[in-house]
Amino acid sequence: GAGVSQSPSNKVTEKGKDVELRCDPISGHTALYWYRQSLGQGLEFLIYFQGNSAPDKSGLPSDRFSAERTGGSVSTLTIQRTQQEDSAVYLCASSLSIYGYTFGSGTRLTVV
Amino acid sequence: ELKVEQNPLFLSMQEGKNYTIYCNYSTTSDRLYWYRQDPGKSLESLFVLLSNGAVKQEGRLMASLDTKARLSTLHITAAVHDLSATYFCAVANTGNQFYFGTGTSLTVIP
Figure 1: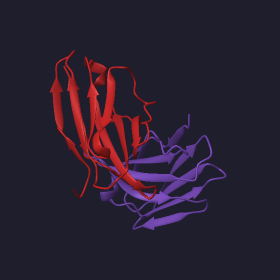
Figure 2: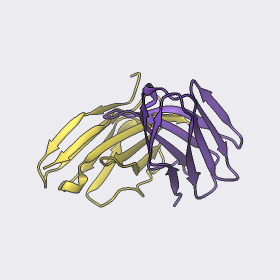
Figure 3: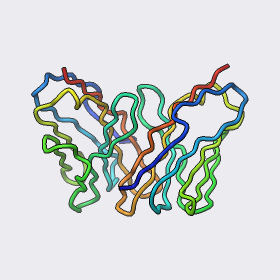
Figure 4: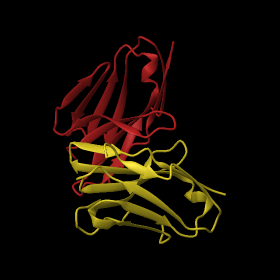
């Protein structure tokens, strides 16, 4: 596709439920990132995939968070047993080189 | 961990005026990026600075990078209302992990 696609755009879930957020990167982009942006805050790094290398998971805030990237393309971020503090916008970005990182429009997650 | 600080956090300026946003970072890097974010929207890439002394300009915005001082600036010339947005700088480490500043919320007043 022409850009990074994220789905759903909005998700409201009950506390304790699991959610899956999807990211379709730009075709051919080898690097994929997940970030979290809380209301009025900056971006918090979560996880980074580069090609077939082991992902950099150093930003995941707890073991309730996990992510995978299948076939070097689509990525899914899973949050188990959601908590209210997980409410945020989750942004995905992909890149082919250091010259350009393209962000998706994000998934706004609200845990009630 | 690489730390990135932006200032000011909030900036209200009149149309036609000039101002500079500063981005300082804590460890060596020669890759710095500026992004714009409109309310409720994602991040739009503005500038990619990849070497010491790099200067990029687009319209009323000009970005520069001083890797020795670990400082980048985003200069706004003759501000217009359309520039109202939040501006983020981001620094990449050798592992290609991005570290973002806290953002500068810019409001241009007619």
